[in-house]
Length: 292
Length: 99
Image 1: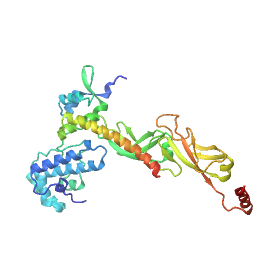
Image 2: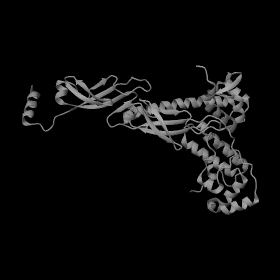
Image 3: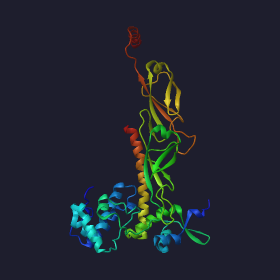
Image 4: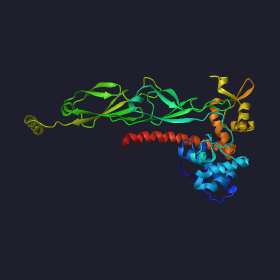
């Protein structure tokens, strides 16, 4: 557990007046308030630190204890006992919730002061939203399927619709924190991350891949089997196909999100492979061809 | 589709819980920031707007931002959200060319 420099967090020196603390807190709270920085985890973390710093420095008793023990905070227990004997009271400073649990303070704070004493404006009615990340591979995202995730020790079974995009968010209504005073539960937002695939590249609903064809098929034409996400398919290769030729297979790409039966296209780029280890006879024939 | 009663929260109840004046809710409605409906002569707030409303209350009571400011912030946050969606889409396109 590390010592936390509350003065540094509020960008103040140790002689800061109550008014200066209040001013610094308000300024930084506006800057890092989660409602003004949606989805910014760093801002949320900073906001919690600012709240914690204010909780200590705006309370004369806590500030005194903090100033007295500082880096030697682990010996604060004796001070605490003396304080309890005096049974002093404290009204608590103003503290912003930012829609988050204000009691979510550092271990340092909990060790020194025994948890949050509250004092924040209780505006929370609807439960807090939760967010989570789920990594899928491309083949998972190709079909509508179910996944089980664990939130707050509870298993939640969710359906992932086929065609979901990398970075897309799924909202699960009512799976966030419980509401307060009869308010509704918060929601759970799951951000989907789709890992890259060694064979396919995805662009929207279209898939891109490469297929090797030998020299003879490229020259004379023929048929090849191409692996797709829905199985192998037979593809006709036209005679005199050039290396790098790109063909489009309609509706063989990725499923369109929440549009059942609709698919993007599959683009195949042919890579012509040249024969190696030629026999003398083959060399002779190629030589004849080259002089015709 | 008509709104079901379970999808609504009585405004007076909400104001008591949050210790806010109804005039503030009314001001937000005038700016088109939230929607208020009347069911059986009772003023109610749609459940789906609760998240926004609680955010506006925090902005007002915690950060001293007035209704005009909240309106401006709501519009800017909306633009940020759209831009974040666009960034996400562009990142996916970029990934296609980088892989």
